[in-house]
Length: 344
Image (cartoon, rainbow, N blue to C red; front, side):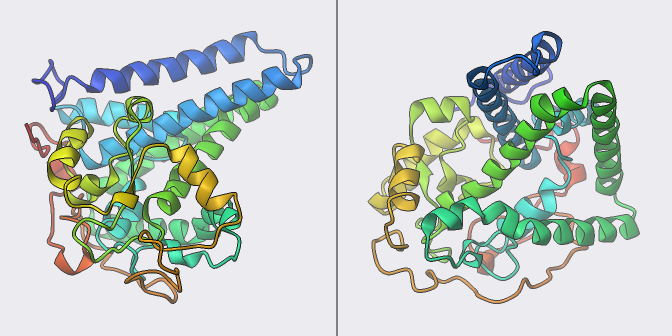
């Protein structure tokens, strides 16, 4: 369960988030100051690439958490934090709202979910995983443009937040490339690009072959304690879709209480690495969560993306089933003082 509030933080557990953010910043600064890319060996280069990519991946998970449940009680602190998160993951925090919160969560595995996994139709499960991000990137960008255009016309603050975040990010990125384009590429840009690929590709691991209409069997969980410490309980994905507005520190306890007694056993996997290797890199056929033949997936919609109501402003879906959605809290409500969904 979450601990009591700590100063301006709604949950003291977010000290972990801030700590890993400082580790990422320290890592990038030290690499920038100390590395000589022209002389270092391939093992050093590859090891540091893996480290920084994983740290960028932690940033993407932190963006995910903050987009659902901003950590601070005060709007100004959340704005500063969101800018830091933008630099940590290498993309605007505000763009997480249309593609993830409003498309994926509200319309899971339907044509309004731009990240639905049945878009991937290769016979090779390895290709379905590895090519997921580049295959849906165009849909993500089109969805973001439509949403931000609608928010601009409505005069909503989320569009101003987006402009602020994306402007600061590109100023920093250009400055880094001017200072040293090789270090900018390998110390910052490439690792954060790979990290974004990894974050989006999680959708395949968490949802492919699941049943979006089922109360519990709509998502796959990865329960390793080490994984969930490093990635802020992101492995508990079923409860996140059931209660997307609750803080990440609460999800394990809620999973154990509300999900574990009911979910199909195959949807609780201990190791994400073991599952990924078995299902995507051993030549196995694509199957549903219960082992039945995939044949297009369970209760998923095929066909081109279907536009959704881009003028809406709610921050969170109300659950996993698109047939049961109601409007949730707006971004302005959730980033204001004392408005986050809190579960003790």
